[in-house]
Length: 445
Image 1 (cartoon, rainbow, N blue to C red):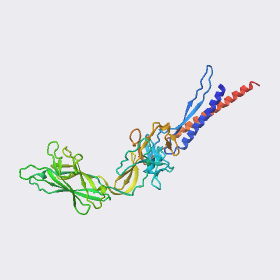
Image 2: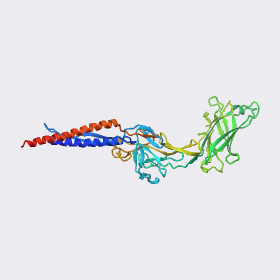
Image 3: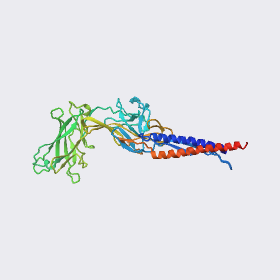
Image 4: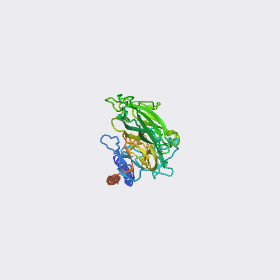
């Protein structure tokens, strides 16, 4: 029995070392494969129940897995849609293209990195056929209520966007100072004007004009009124059209001096909570979706000095800003550290097309390996959860980068030598058992 168990242990030793050599061969063959995760052969002993004064060799068995949590180095490339995860986590991909209305039919797979480029239909895919997946964003960059515990909301990423794009202005900040002395008795009483640019729905630059007229005291000796009458004019139709007016009074207290005290006669267009004045642009070339602009002039009665102020200084614009973008030509498509895939135009306008999440599972090494450095969810890996890149336990997404193979050639070659010697030693066990059995047979002769 003991001799037979020795033979069995030697045979098992040959088998497990052959398996280990197979993993080493796979690792060395993929030492230059981007995103490759090292294959590991893990030996564990087998023990047969022992009896007094007797021992039987149980042998050894092997478990193989991919070391998915092992990280390769990131290298820079010249392709903006080469994407890697800097840290824990994997990118969602698929090998099939389901109709967007049936996104749940896409086969979910995960990979650490990918050299993605648009195919003939604009889908980002690798040369091996893996399609990048993400959550589509609306024009404002919002992905809505995306499902994070499954791939039901994920769709293949398509970057076929309009070559030219523009974003109409929705918000303007009017930060300027009105001279305090202008509301005193005997002041000239002339108006002050400031132009405000905005973009219409066709990407053209248009101009609003804000005209401020001080309210003067009625008689000599009366204190300054600290009041102004304002009117806004639009010039997009070729003629100056009044689009709104309001009266504003400024605070003169020690604590909040110079800030907006009250806004009146605005026709209900002013919101004291937000400090914004909603104005409707005239018709003509401006589409209905962009015919209203919110102009921030300051919140009343709280000492807000970010909009209009009245201080003892000259009339001067301080912060005239606007959102939106003029018509621009598409330059590139890039991904940032938060996983936002953006179209970038020559005007500086960045439009978010997709949000690329980073997937994580409780046991990454339990994922089931597939072709092209991809993995599938398994019972051993646990359920997947999709994080925004750079949040929770997952790393940021890095564009213009690929992850190198996680294989260390020196380690693998050392393991090959050890495996070769272990295999030879197990073969020697079988040879020795054979010779011992031969001696036992010779006793009868």
